[in-house]
Amino acid sequence: MEQYLNFLKHIKENGSIRDNRTSVRTISTFGYQMRFDLADGFPLVTTKKTHLKSIIHELLWFLSGSTNIKYLVDNNVNIWNEWPYEKYKQSDQFQGESLKEYAHKIKSNNEFAEKWGELGPVYGRQWRHFEDSEKSVDQIAKVIEMIKNNPLSRRLIVNAWHAAKVDEMALPPCHTMFQFYVDNGKLSCQLYQRSADAFLGVPFNIASYALLTMMIAKVTDLEVGEFIHSFGDCHIYENHLDQVNTQLTREPKPLPLMNIKKRDSIFDYSFEDFELVDYEYHPSIRGDIAI
Image 1 (cartoon, helix red, strand yellow):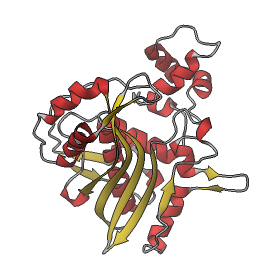
Image 2 (image 1 turned 135 degrees about the vertical axis):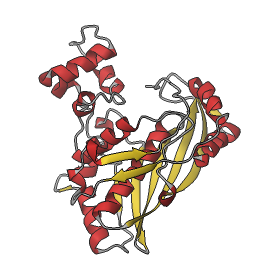
Image 3 (image 1 turned 135 degrees about the horizontal axis):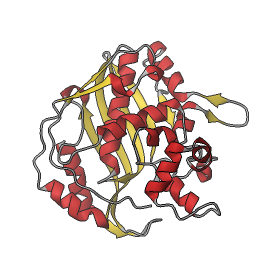
Image 4 (image 1 turned 45 degrees about the vertical axis):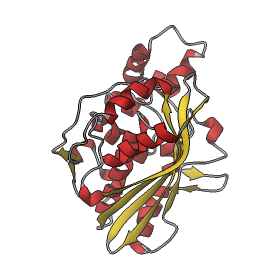
């Protein structure tokens, strides 16, 4: 994962200090691209342990079309909890619960989860039910059908940025649009990410879209090509600088392999269908999310 370390170096060397919607400033630069040949291995960051369980469950959650965190919390994945918790804290029903206590209520109380675990029309909604006043489009199903029947199309696109719905979302999409490309029996994917938390978010994003590309290649009987990751605002939060510097002292380890069970439909996958092999990594490095 030398590509990822070069990305961190680029931000440090070329970025400027900027304020943002959070209380933590960033070192930020605009525009960057990484490329990963998926035949070389599964691009999971090795200079710190990356929590694959969260990545897989989040991707399955997106693909299900859900926008409520209960599925994630039920599977002990807590990466989305802070946003609906902040909304709950501002309500007249807040009783002083900690974030951990809030997550327990989501897991144990379906009625509470239905009301206070909702994120608005975020990724899953846009991927599976992109809608206007007249119709709704399942973009994932449509793009897979196009890959099978018209693989040379230049319209193999999924768009998560619905301008009319952005203000209804707990967090507007950071990874906004992705496009597939078929050549010589290989499926490639390019993602455009408008906003990239380089330390916490980007390792998840790389692995998630690489995995999605591999899954779609499976169900369309194609080999894997490249995952191309293009960025807008690339940033390191100031409270992540020590963690980034630690990573930059570490030597990347060989990439692991990802084995994926063959399924007829991408919507049939479950967590047990994925096997990561030979993942070597440096110790975990923790960092706080800026809300």
